[in-house]
Length: 70
Image 1 (cartoon, one colour):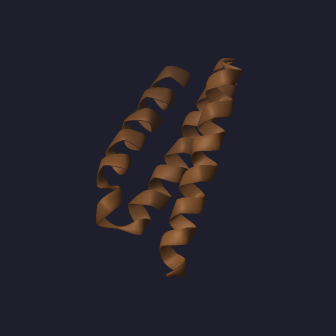
Image 2: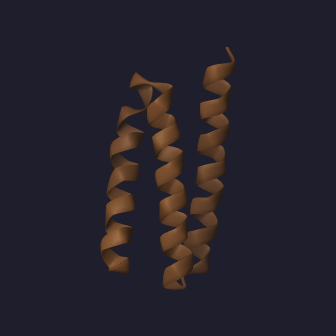
């Protein structure tokens, strides 16, 4: 079940990343899927993956926020 969760969130990350230029909400969805991927990393015991994905989520949330501030 954990593998299915990981594969799903990584697939969603890829889709939302590809669509980011269309709407800031795809950036938000990308950030959420990064959090899901980070969760997968921590649960799977691969802490470097979990840490990197957590940072990616923070970067994506910051980008999403910056896009709305204009």
